[in-house]
Amino acid sequence: MSPATELSPTAIKAVDPSAQVDDILALPEHLRDALWRVQSAGLRPRDCQGGLVVAGMGGSSIGGALARAVLGDRASRPIVLARGYALPSWIETDSTVLCVSYSGETEETLAAYDAARALGANIVVVTTGGQLAEQARQDGVPVVPVPGGFQPRAAIGYLLVSALEVAALCGAGEGLHSEIDVAAAHAEQLARRWGPDAPEDSAAKALARGLHGTIPQIAGAGLTAPVAYRWKTQINENAKLPAFAAELPEMDHNEIVGWEQATRLGSFSAVFLDDSDLHPRVRQRIELTRGLIASRGGATFRIDTEGETRMERLISVLLLGDLMSLYLAVLAGVDPANVETLESLKLALAGG
Image 1 (tube, rainbow, N blue to C red):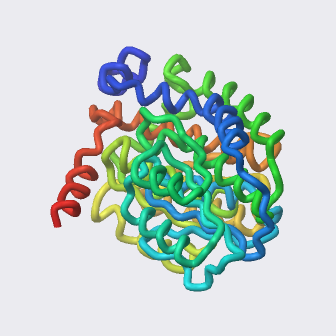
Image 2 (cartoon, helix red, strand yellow):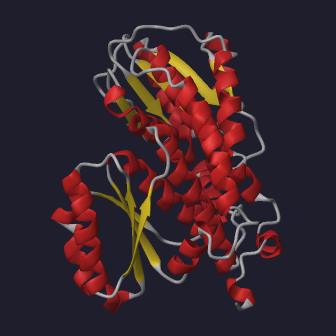
């Protein structure tokens, strides 16, 4: 094996000086700590007929999407995402708005908070501090404090659990305390199987090598649909690579045709995130779609979730994708913590 493809702890450390991999591997601890932090925030149950709106951007918003997927048909009221400056027009006082900004300075989330206040909605804030925490405390709005020092995307355990707990408190979903605890223990086992000390042919390392040098397309369905999007954004931010996400069965009604000329443009790959609870026809579509893409020269991979509960299974592919994206960064020789392009855009907006 050449040094360029080595994914040993030493090789990883050389490219990951700030130890982003340790933050990924700490997911089980984050899940447990998040439960304690939400319970300590003094949140009171409130029956909100209007459901839950999760307002946030980037790595701060994905927790809401994952929580909605985990709950599935156990969600008793709407759970929607607001990724922008405005809230849905139908929001009223009987809705809960969860404003999530890791830094507390995200301008879109601050605008959504102001909109929720103007509407008189029930508000909960999740943040490390910043303007959002300051304003919430002045307004008497409860704040779930998230520990600082992470890249926002590495705080996913805190953001997922916060969304699940708030959904339960506002009557939008069931409480999942025991499932979160079991999923954390399951994640500890998977971290040992897929982490830096794992064999070179372990799942996360092997997948990273398979995707290296390609433009990945990640496809999910049902439980795995928001995880596919998470894989895409983790590849974007950690490995500094273009990547795209799609959802089955929708991609079979349009995107599949685009693969006819993919190999003329570059090297593409497709990853399908399967789950035992998917509709049988969707699982059949995964195999057929994968075959069509492979017949046109694209590298294809099928990944199965692992675990009994929806929470365990979602956490399994969440952790796998996070580690895979970091290993992709190592193979590309780029620091996974560096998001200079993103920061330069924020500075340009601030100056405008």
